[in-house]
Amino acid sequence: MKYITEFRRTELAEGLVSDIRQKSKRKVRFMEFCGGHTVAIFKYGIRQALPPTIEMVSGPGCPVCVTATADIDKAIALANFPGVIITSFGDMLRVPGSCSSLQNARAQGGDVRIVYSTMDALEIARNNPNKTVVFIGVGFETTAPTVAASVLQAKMQGTKNYRVLSLHKLCPPVIKTILDAGEVKLDGLVCPGHVSAVTGSNAWQFVAGDYGIPCVVAGFEPTDILQCVDMLVNQVEKHQAKVEIAYKRGVTPEGNLQAQKFMLQVFEPCPAKWRGMGEIPDSGLKLRPEFAGYDAEVAFDIKTEPAVEPKGCICGEILRGVKTPAGCRLFRKICTPENPVGPCMVSSEGSCSAYYLYGDDGGR
Ligand code: SF4
Image (cartoon, rainbow, N blue to C red; front, side, top):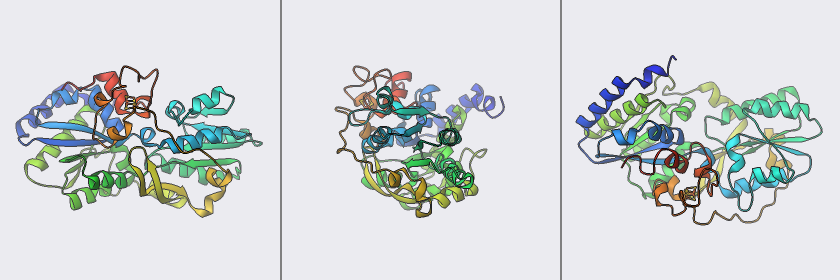
């Protein structure tokens, strides 16, 4: 299959591993920002293949995982309003809020439906003119343009019963927060491929320029990631810090200007709560005043109790790259994909789920 088979070729991967092993002299810690990269790294045994000089740590790039409990409580509260149909991507349903989940709300009679795109949510709105359809907007710069497009389409078609609960997050501000906190020392950043397809690799210039940390945007196939690590090692060994792209079939320096335009036409930056990191300025997206008619927070008086975090769950520390799932005393014993305690075990892109499925220590 074009664009997949050639990036999984064993001889290519072996060549890159051998190159990395030869070049890597200094002990380094690279963070893979994106949950998709974490899963690929585990699935393809990349940690085991890398030399002991290279430590890979997972970052906050799982949108379901970083959604704050308080925001999940809001989505659950919305499901209890009469005449509301909640639409959401599947992963969100099982994420525990303070004392329930969207899945439980559905079991208790709430109309909660899984959709595969915002266009499905719009269609449900058109087919149910006497109800209000709320789309739970969770995701990074990758997802936000599609949600923006759905709002523009709703406006164009005169669909007045469609709302968005915007819990979107922007990636560069959270990386800045992690770097400023200084809890984890990084020598390189594996920049997210899908997010960078929208933002462009230029979004990471501040990491190289202000913090002196090498950045390489990676794709999701094994040789993409190995090429990225190889390029990071090159920079480290040459004492360079610049932004490079190891995913040129998907990412340019400027990104997708049309997607950026849609996003900024409908949304504007706002403070957002991140699990384990608190509120980060300008790291979320809210609907602009001219689209307030589509904003679930404007349409409904959403009241929730102060959020209660899952007891014993260390998802917040894992998302900051400070701990690994192996450091959680609930991991495997109490918290499993069948009975998840925290979002990092629920999400298919969560670190705990990846560690559970592919090995606690990635071979180390
Ligand atoms: Fe939270 Fe479960 Fe991960 Fe522990 S193993 S951090 S309880 S999701």
